[in-house]
Image 1 (spheres, helix red, strand yellow):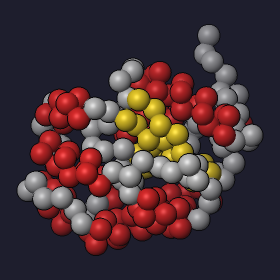
Image 2 (cartoon, helix red, strand yellow):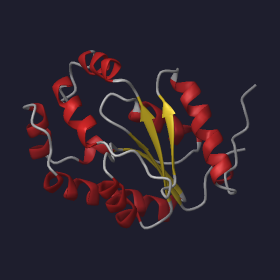
Image 3 (cartoon, one colour):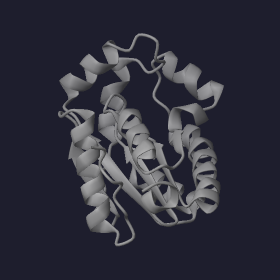
Image 4 (cartoon, helix red, strand yellow):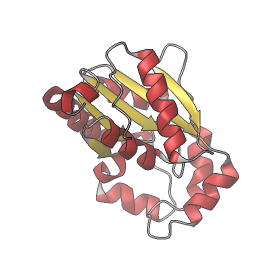
Length: 187
């Protein structure tokens, strides 16, 4: 199968979690597997936000609103053109997810990656070229609000290989949405 048969119908998928949880890795794998666009949420940050985080200063809600609106609008436009889009975005608070859903304007599913603090610090310290310093992990964990039962969301423990995370995500998406068509396995 190829193309549209491998996609979800008019749906956005956000892989969420704190920095270092593996959002970008899983979201890019999902985008390839579902043959749909992938958006890296970090690419939508303003230069002021990046500079602030680089200095080790946590972002405020006021810093995040324009970023979430810009990212959500891009995802929504892509979904309306392509049918499905996948993004990596921290989406740490319920209010942030609500803001994204409003900007996207189509059904949106969230896949939260959970990782222990020590592993997050280890991962961030192994990414010397990234602007997000490990000392901001505690501020992210402090504001993290796990998705509620009324949100279309699942949680995956990110201590397994990305391919296993991908399989778990695809299984959840298939069980959550009747319009998911799983790509044929290569063989």
